[in-house]
Image (cartoon, rainbow, N blue to C red; front, side, top):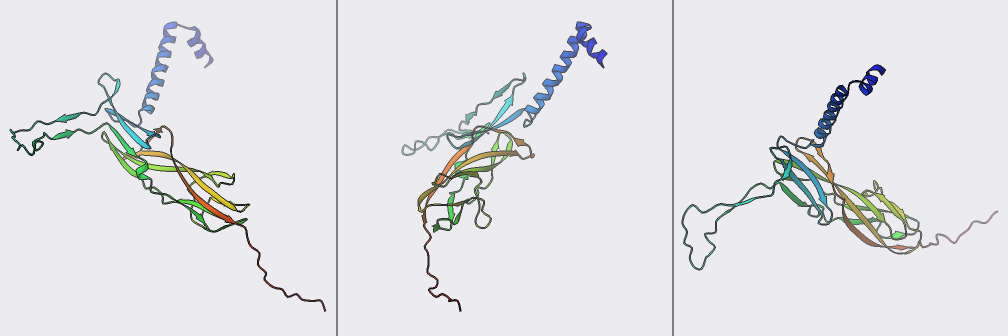
Length: 247
């Protein structure tokens, strides 16, 4: 094996050049195939998130004949009327030619519209110093579907939550759950009125109808929720005034 390496490094320059060319072509083919895993014979699919507009954006890129990728701009074609039309004066637009829209290679869908109106729930409602409360957000969002350029995409929203309990305590976790399975539990140490908030980062998961996962680029979409809670001090109660004396 050592002789082969020495021949390649110090032997015929032509052989060395041929060997390097074969290695380069092999690496290029391997990387190209993995990069276009969500491609058909003539198009590729990309998915991204627009955090500013709370959108998920799916784009189909058509392959040109020369092998260079290009994005096809949506085209709106106007079909001319097949017969002469003389509309009444009172209805000037009655004979407007129909507009035929071709399938678009770009689809935008609002993530915000698919997130239900989440309610931040605190259990119990009347909090007491030293006793834990349970916090959670419900209901859960449902998956939805995008159709773009011949691809069918199943979109799932995956939340991660940054909780703040208003007394300086912060935790990272999920949406939590109702008692007793809730995972977001906190205990207040002082009596006061606190603002409990949840900053939800929605990540987007995209899977094609063939079961291939599509990498989603862009930042997570952020939505905020909050609720006030009043924490009271525990009150002492006199149970009995009697006492037993020693015999």
